[in-house]
Figure: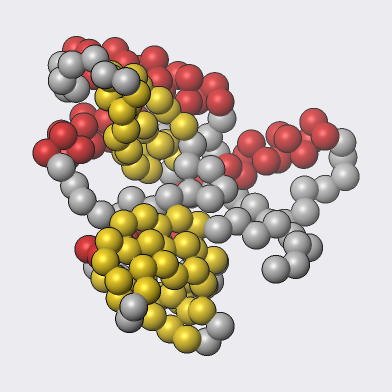
Length: 185
């Protein structure tokens, strides 16, 4: 995945600003909407705050209890995203960090979170991932399988027993594939 001077600068500003709110920067994306840049900021709770496997049953104490439990498991709420958005808007304006007009969007990474750095992968070993490459490797640009291994500059995808090692520098996009309990493939 390519890092640009703007993404480096914003990471240096946004990361510390988010830590004051008790959340972490998961990743940044840039897009365009007309003549404006869109800056998407993905935030997550610190790893220690994740208290369970999202595929576990949520219990039968009513929908309110289930929603409370889900909120505790995911760690990032809509209210936290709104608070982070207001805070980052102020910080980015004060730093004059983004050239020209822009739209700031703040979100959680979600169940099918995108990975922005190889160090984010380790917590998801054994889970299904979807990997797209900039260029073909072994005549393929798309791999989907279990994340078997990860390191500082690579990952290994296991597709039905066939393991493929991919250098992180070749990855265009990588994201988790959520598998709902009881769903058959």
